[in-house]
Amino acid sequence: MSLRLYDTGTRGIREFTPLTAGHAGVYVCGATPQAAPHIGHMRSGVTYDLLFRWLVASGYDVTFVRNVTDVDDKIINVAAQTGTPWFAVAEANQRVFNKGYDELGCLPPTVEPRATGHVPEMITLMRRLIEDGHAYNVGDDVYFDVMSWSGRYGSLSHQRLDSMRAAGDSVGDHAKHDPRDFALWKGAKPGEPSWETPWGPGRPGWHLECSAMATKYLGPAFDIHGGGVDLIFPHHENELAQSAAAGDEFARYWVHNGLLTVNGEKMSKSIGNVVLLSDLLDKARPVEVRYYLGSAHYRSMIDYSDEALHDAAAAYRRIEAFVVRAVEMAGRVEPGTLPQAFADAMNDDLGVPQALAVIHEAVREGNTALTAGDKDTLVRVLAELRAMLGVLGIDPLSPPWEGADEDLSGVLDALVSLAIEQRQAARERKDYAAADAIRDRLTAAGILIEDTPRGPRWELKRS
Ligand SMILES: Nc1ncnc2c1ncn2[C@@H]1O[C@H](COP(=O)(O)OP(=O)(O)OP(=O)(O)O)[C@@H](O)[C@H]1O
Ligand SMILES: [Zn+2]
Image 1 (cartoon, helix red, strand yellow):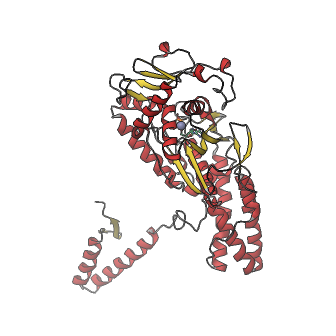
Image 2 (cartoon, rainbow, N blue to C red; image 1 turned 180 degrees about the vertical axis):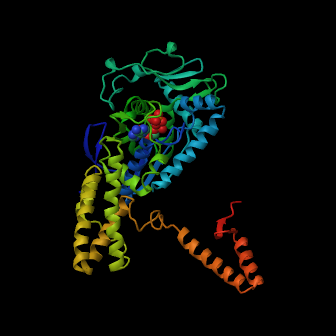
Image 3 (cartoon, protein in one colour; image 1 turned 60 degrees about the horizontal axis):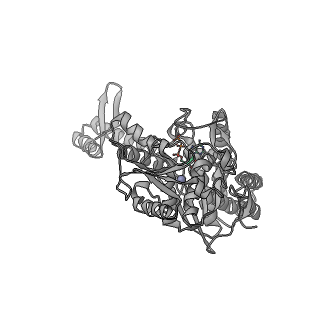
């Protein structure tokens, strides 16, 4: 079986046939870095990392593009509230997003384009749309003309044009030809960032950015466009309308992840129900958080709960405990070939729950082999298991997890205590030169010794 994906555009499972054999181009709508990431954002990060890894494991040469919307109303509002430049807000939060993706073992995308770096491409796209009668400017604002595309507008979100709500753009709504028209470009306002265009200064609309960046890195037609289901309308509908109206085929498969919710409601900064990634990392190790966020099917909803996190962490630890014991008995075994049942599960619209069932079955078989001292079976199971865990980015013996928990503080304590005991012994035999030499060597290494009534104490000098 080869990969089949659920495509929002056709509302069905479709065989994945790439535009170019052996290559897959994927564009995912990434962060609007107005604040530190919550775990809903990280669910998106893990979901598309799983898709990326599975495409690579299936032999594709993958170009994976995940953008950053680094200029936006929300960022400008935070900047105004905090008295920080808008670009500093975006930069600081983007760093935290990337740290979060790294902490959860998400592979870096091939390219991570920022909207502000692609204004010329956006101007070109707007020019094409205006020339073809699909967009118009009113003063410094530029709008997409939905009625000029009325036959196809709504095809992605499966809505009829006459039942659609108006796009709620913040600027110049009164000037639009039709309430459903949406802003491609927003004319400059005092104090806001702006860029020059033939239609006057302003800043990009969110939808235009993604069309411009996707086609810049993947071409006018590309394989897969992803994002959360919250983006199907209006964001992706509008991306598709702009690009298709300009004559680009654009995405051939639309993949959408389900939301991470709290009591059934989307986890979102604007709703205020967020759990930050940093909060979760106080409760579980990064690999356990990754397991938690990635173990449900990507299209299902995950309603956040501490119990579910706890259960996921326990499930991962069962796998990890087996791997550790297997290596103790059989030695280190390199990843082998993937079991067919695992590949079939992943090919079936990234069926991670079924793929994990294959993994847990392998752990059961491996534990039986451990008990029986059956080394041959153990070696085979460990090799298959490592291959499967590697595809899901959770192999305890691979980076970034191998050695991640190593805490060297106990080793350090033992070594410093040994040196202190030798210093004490030197003092007792009145060899003060030797005692001072030990102390000086420790000081030079940044270890301070304090003689207290209860004996010497040590601490690291923080410079
Ligand atoms: N709660 C969530 N569950 C799953 N995916 C999410 C969630 N929130 C955002 N995403 C996805 O993360 C990516 C980046 O989202 P974006 O920065 O636009 O967040 P947002 O929807 O504005 O949320 P917030 O208002 O909390 O910042 C998008 O693909 C989006 O669909
Ligand atoms: Zn987008």
